[in-house]
Image (cartoon, rainbow, N blue to C red; front, side):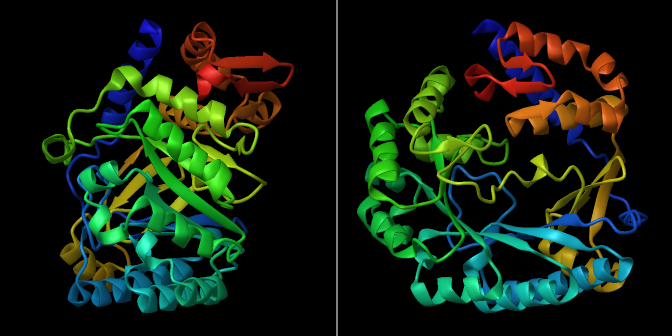
Length: 392
């Protein structure tokens, strides 16, 4: 347990250093795409009708006056990447709440499908948008996977998260989700665990509802992660986060979900094979469009401006709104690959050698040693697979 906590603390420090891009620059742009390669596209829609106190993703309050010109700039950025020669096989639309303005979202999806040879589209939404007409329109526009931000079915917790008044009670959420079944290839629930005030009994009730009362295809469980930008508000409105019970809660989730569902990543459980939201497991390079989106290409990471006004100003002038970027070191690239592949539960030694050579294992000898000491991986022939402890 002590070694596990030390490893977690170390990884958090590495992550903070990795996200330090330095000052904004005017001379940045994405490198040219590799001819014939299809990438993944991430699209960020930062608008929300309710700013939940626990959420540290880039989001702003929704107004139509801001959203309409934002979507126009977003479509201009997408045309720019088409003109640059990019093609995309899959699209993930996140936020924020992408469905906050369905007309603008549909126009954007239609443009994406007209410009790129997209086969799979995943989009996020909130429970109050689960009306059949809206869902049918999304499906007909090409959305294959819909991910619904539920977080919990516990009314007390929903009130603490300030979601009860806007999105309804736990029973109302269940009813809406039952009505949404079968419309998309994959219907996913996003749940949060280790919430302040969440008891073991509350978590077990959530799990029972998912397994026994809902016909959803998938459920993703995220540990509550308090970012620096939201920590004070979250503590004042929801209470303190207890890290000492996080692993116990995760093990409760894994035990309850395995059987009716199967793990498809460290925190995503699926009834059948389908799309998952951890798109970076299968796509080491991807392009991010929209304010606050990130891209990883050619051994470098890029970020678009987090300013909505700055985004709308830069796109017409430059075609994009990238303001930050830095090259990743060899160690960072290898670590990134290591964590993402294992997050997807396993990696192949042969595939790693084909991509990086034996140098990969020499550079990451410390990481492999620590994961072995933690009992986090099991090595059988060519395969390196996460254990149950490794999943946590």
